[in-house]
Image (cartoon, rainbow, N blue to C red; front, top):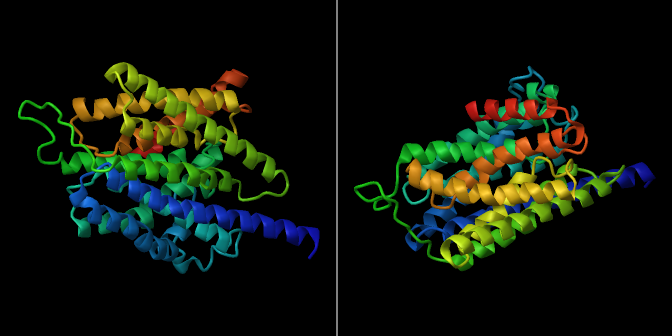
Length: 364
């Protein structure tokens, strides 16, 4: 084996390991969502998480991958059933499995926000639609050479492409469904509906934090040619933002409630991870620190606003964690990127491009 073959093998091996970690995020989401909701809904939530991946895998292969990575136009990749033409023309089987697990992650974000009041058969239809069309089209714009990519939009591992797509869908779904029975009093005051297991919720959070090293780090899709150095930087910035966001939320809830709020602090960890995902390879540790601080503040504020002001019932805080912080993380890349960010170059161009991207993806 020559040095080029060895480098290719290492790159493929790294990406496949990362894909396996991203797949295991399904377990993390299942535990978070099950723990943060009532025990009687556990079976429904577990089945939805299982079906997100099991339905999404063949549908993304049959239809979604071609839409995402075809070259028909800047807005729509094209129909390439069973990925026959796309695989082999600049993409490969490694890309297919890596993007399949990302697609499933975007889909599964929504199940928590719609928990306890969604008909299972209807949810399966939603899961198929997001895997077949919604994620692939916006993914084409960002990662498939589409019009946002041409503008210079930056989303390294998916604050927008995965998390904001799932978060906005979660907002729409939860708003359409309406609140759970008993969530609000007759005068509109929100009632707490405690989840049945903080232990499961915490386990899910730790699984997701662990797997995020594959989610962000694996998005280098290479360790050769400087990829190892980028991956190391991504690990550090990812971990820093998550840790700082966790501490931020703990302090906020400790001050507000005279003791730390466990479930909110766990969501703070996830908020920091979501927020740093877009710029994890572009920001330095200082940037990651401030991204985490804002993510911690934002998740606490948005959970309160969504629940008490807009009366949108989101049992797990997915709208705040993935929607609001996916948006913040995308914009933060335009602020903290060491190469193009406003705070480092004094140039607004990247921030404007990032803003165009979040508006377009939200509208889609």
